Image (cartoon, rainbow, N blue to C red; front, top):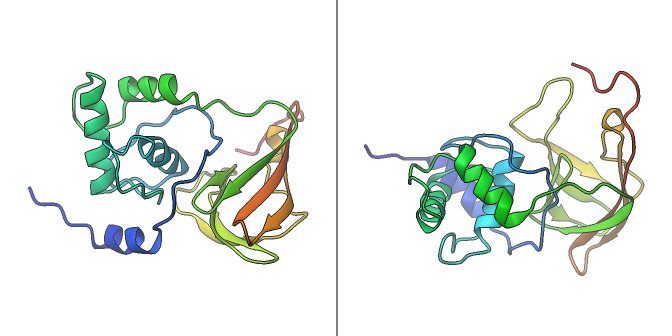
Length: 194
């Protein structure tokens, strides 16, 4: 069966980025497969890219295409997991063990670059006074397709209903970094909307 993904080719060319340092995300909790687009796929790509023998392309697009499928199979082979390319419970457990993708639980500053994600915001371009990216809505219904969004200093991209505040505190266009101040507290009564 021959697979052809013209959309992936466009995404790969547009989204070529340098390998980011680290993306903070919750542990892998979602099955991932060919054709899926999500923030966890972007985290997966970033973690797989740490081993050039597994994912030498180092593309962090959030789209699970042919290159990601190939990298997942190489990862599975390396760790003795059946090589299906599907990221299920066994593969997720190994990823969580190796990359310890725990979430931040206290106040602190987090610096991110192009291709990295903070919360539900994937950074695509850092300008002098703003940051362009994709917003992956979680509430009331989670979206798999990001919506273009521009943020500036002072914007809060956290989810108050989860007890998370993530405020943009600085934008450095020269170094291509954005610093967020993240505070995690007890969620309010009632939580997030359904």
